[in-house]
Length: 205
Image (tube, rainbow, N blue to C red; front, side):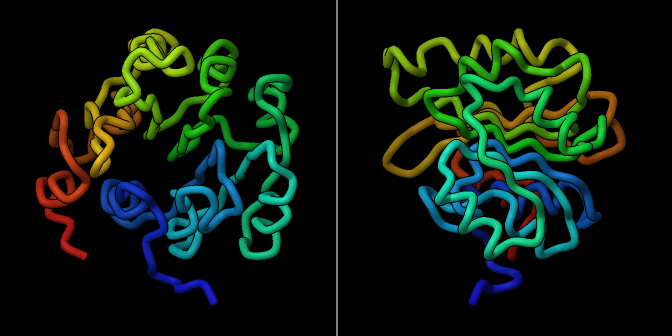
């Protein structure tokens, strides 16, 4: 049985987001949602759902989506984001124009999603963007960090620059929409581990 208040994120994204939004309910978009709770590397939105959030999960693996739908309350769809534009999926599933949390973790599909990212049609208050910078000159991930900055555009700023995973290095940047989060507490950090982030934001449990 899934534990209601357990964190399922790999680097504390879920705990941080709940605190950042002051435990208010919101709407999430989970790109690369896996099976919704464990495969392949945990999940960033299950704790949010258990705390009253709604949202949409997307993954290219149908077996993951089947398990997601068995274990989760929110909606999930199977889609190859290298072939289907994200905008089309969001519109077909009646997603709100302002989405509170975007978990962006699609590995090899990252560049394809960035190339057709619907920044003109949808706004995101908080984005956890996986760039896997620790892989260095990998042909898959090289340059994705800088490209994301350009694609997301001037409405967004990096709140946490290079969140690090133990024994790996920098794996993500956490962005916020400056206008949509102007009244929320912000502590800007760089090259930090999750426990350092939680400490800076006084998140103790």
